[in-house]
Length: 285
Image 1 (tube, rainbow, N blue to C red):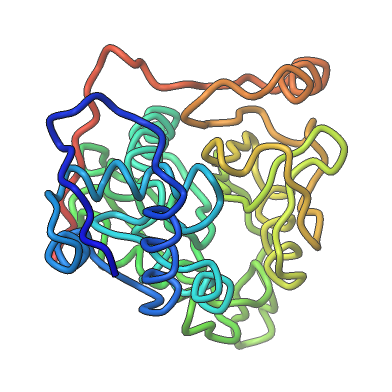
Image 2: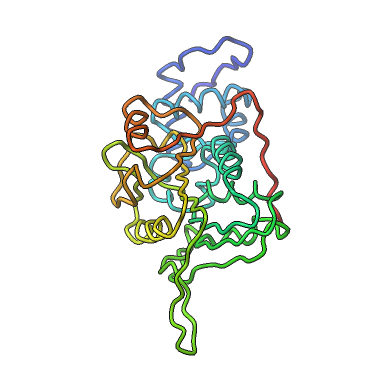
């Protein structure tokens, strides 16, 4: 294999076909690699590898992660695993999480679904107080500040280990003949897999779609959370039509057709202030 030339001080240029093939082939073989490992293997700087991986991701040959890359085959097999998804689009998720947290009022009741973007929201709620939170996200109890929460409820059901979530009814059963109580919330924060003008909000799992739809039905306000990689896609199960949400919280402006459809349906698009730097919020041990 030819040694790659370190061009870390050069102007960005198109990755040569041979070099692209070498990198893509190695990532495919290794399935998951780090920038440091690639820099050592190919004898170039970490900055060079980062630029190369960014271009390979743009060309659809690898999936860029925080600190490295994952092959397309490996991503297809593990796309529902939380530990892999946590590495994807990290900056966008932190931006969305910080912005979505501003919609949450102190002393309010919030329903939050499973997902890595909603985990970012939970971390940004650290300055809130007296919140009542109901969720199927098994990671939120560990991620959210105890100071922010008055009551935290986790919906029961089947546990999905890959997504670290539960799948079941949006409700709680009580003994003594009380049955299931009717639940309502002030705000539902729903992370989705796809957003399109034709298909609305969708996800790849039918049971998850049903659960998200139930959360939406119980909310006075609904905020859909989706980074720009979800735009224009339509997955297996529709969660809701576009107009069912009050807000779409995202990292980049939607394309023209989707933006027009959101406007027609009365959905407010919330975008981060690009002049304000986004700082990752440390996870609570």
